[in-house]
Length: 358
Image (tube, rainbow, N blue to C red; front, side, top):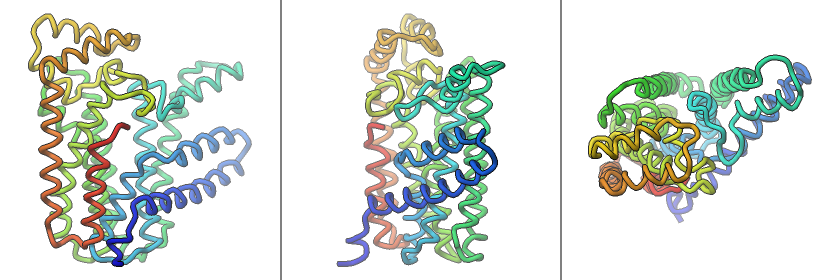
């Protein structure tokens, strides 16, 4: 059998998990060596990092590397795994900005440390302690990402080629996060603006940039392949974020790990919301405005907004857009610039990114 036929995404995900666990153990032991005060930090970081997740960014990066025709390589896999720590940073900070109580079915980091402060009867504000700790742990994850990349064992020339992609990925993520925060302050909705947020906050740093990162590691001249990766990664990245928009309102809490309708409580200006507000009657707009951004929104209130999204065909339109974007990404896989093993794996990742429940 050929390498393309025997390649397994599950096996690669297991290797990514192993690399992250090993790195996290090393770094958490260092934290504990500084002082017992950091035991809780080390425990929280290790648990958060090793609590799996989909590992999409490392997988896209490693498949992007293999797409150059390069051979399987432990250093390249460790470098790809380092991108998961950028995602950890984004999640910790995102939960603070959104005021989210939970993540993956467990208390979010700021809520966990807030509870720790309260149970210890410590001085000062428990809420502020939790927020401050989550910001610092998110920053630490970002530092660890760079450290894991630099210690991956990549040849110096491969590492140097990867750094512009790595830097651009982090810049675009932070820009997207700001666009998300800024959008929530505006008095009008815009599908175009919401799509831009989706592109930069999640799409590019989840798929396109990791693919570029992998291509830069695997080839000294990856420009043609990067264009193909963009043709695949940009529409798929947007479809990925749009699926998040749907799950943020219609997702099953037992699968998403977050309360039903949490995007509504957080007042997120998603493409789904913008599409809906472009179609509603005055009475329906009043209902949405009453519920949007209400942290105490009940299940009945969530259901009211859901019904409006369905009856205005806004949900159906978004599903159609996800399908069209996914088809555009799929068409890019016909390029012979991509090595066969990667072409097959990218087809599988396309399905994982868009047909998911979490």
